[in-house]
Length: 459
Image 1 (cartoon, one colour):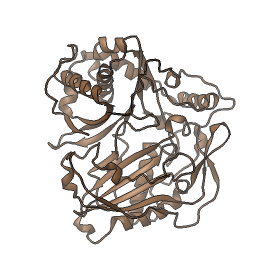
Image 2 (cartoon, helix red, strand yellow):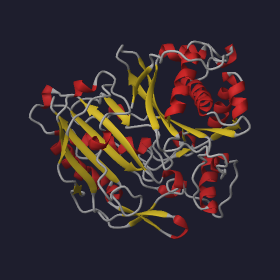
Image 3 (cartoon, one colour):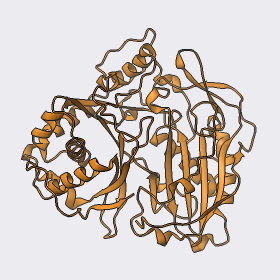
Image 4 (spheres, one colour):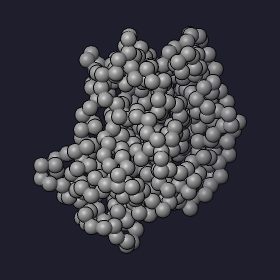
């Protein structure tokens, strides 16, 4: 990534794109999973597309603008605005006011971004402009779309979503529908399904599972990550890196998934880098898509939030002093907690406890979007060169979350790119710790040395 890359983006005035046909004016309640405090924020996504000679003379801005109006006929709640009712219950007022759309041109080519298109992207604020007054959760546009033409004929599609409306799977479903209509279809191949009541609390609500992810932990020692002096970096894990970490595990643990192994490793390295007191509790929160956990399954086309935040808790001392396999077992156990009953229990807890935020004190949250399908979204110019989250560390409390994003490096190796956000000093320690892990030196004290080659980008 050409981190020193600077370019100018010329934007037209933001406009509202409304559904192209009349749509119902009604109130639609979000589910009790959707409207929890930890999802009340905007999530940025970015897609890069190459020039395609077959599309010569066709304007991506015009095509996507017109397709947005047609797609909103099917997804008309996105054209509305959120309101809050009694008990902090969120609902969509389907007003048809529209989504914000920004047309832009940048004096840069896709090639100038370099081979490694990955977060953090240069000039992201120019490629996904924060229109003043548009980013509140209530009474604001639920989607912002910016399409930026590049001088090479390629373009960048950037989008910002109010997370209470959809998770990654739901957002990709909407983006795929927008892509299909951009390519000439009259309606999406998967029609949207609302039915948010499927993930509402029971009557009466009853918490039947343990939910340590929603414990209200006092930040007694100021260990919530400070927001100033934050370093953003991305780390690439291909077959070589994963094999080196796997080799540190005893034989009976070596068959665990890449997600579990990488999560255990990153959690341990990140904790060492942040240096909490050894007696303090630390947490790993693994986002688990619960769509496959329901019987009968959630309907095809459901685009609401359908995931859980299961957590593993230990002390910093135990995590840092034990071998990697200790962290791995905790990650596995957390993931296995999520069932249909667990999801109903979360919805009930939200209603009983006033929709709390998940615990952020000494927490690290990981979300695997490798199967979400961002990179497969097409508008007529082929698949995205990069598609997915625009940066790590986003959230109602920034700095806590990382995404696992599918990625092909300059050598053509398939792997994952994982953006991380840490205070600058902790990032330096994290780099050294991860370097020592990849040199199979995991139980040695943290050592200095050159910055490892697997760090591809930093701001």
